[in-house]
Length: 318
Image (cartoon, rainbow, N blue to C red):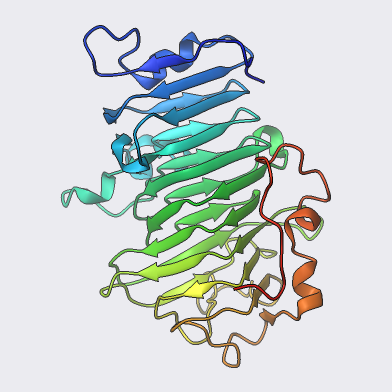
């Protein structure tokens, strides 16, 4: 973990700054990690973080002030994960108060492709007040090296994209985040990829908001990338016009993963809520069933790595 006594490294476009790029500062950190603070501005670069204990934060008054952006697509770099603007695989990673963007899809000359903004595969990672901007496959919340499970916690984040834009096989909890579908012929909020019934993974969205551009079409809560995909929405405000059945098959007419996945909602509300008309394999949770997906239960009581005074589950609150 980073030392409380070590001086943070400062990244800035100012002429006299010690570090003008984020990667420069990351590389200068000791093996045990440390703090990197980034002054407001746009930093066009790819960032790779393999050290543990790295804390990356923007110093502006809001996340919009500090932007790390690049424009790689999977189609031209040899794989989805390789397209990431920021790739963090070290444990105990902290990311806060900035924007991570992949602007590949904004170039009309580029063919459609997965284009990741943030690839997060470390354990005990915390992402707070961060904007993640992209189109297809914006956030990879996945397992770590050698298939090790990753625990991740997202709070007060804004994540936008269209197809499968929160995807992977981590054990990830999202608190008070907004997922926003951008204009596209299809929008799928999640593509969780739990591959075996004994894997300890899943995505839980607690008191989050789902929204979408007016031109977004065929909006689904998720589709199962692997047969045991697990996604739970707790007290979610659904402002998007989600398809009535909520969930869709990975490849309609070719796969049958809905029958083995675990998709559930508890007290969804808003224009896209439709508890009586959802896909028959999905679940509408009772108070007791929802409590089994509380923060403490989800992380099996091992919550000492979470921010101080983490949000506590209340079954009756909206």
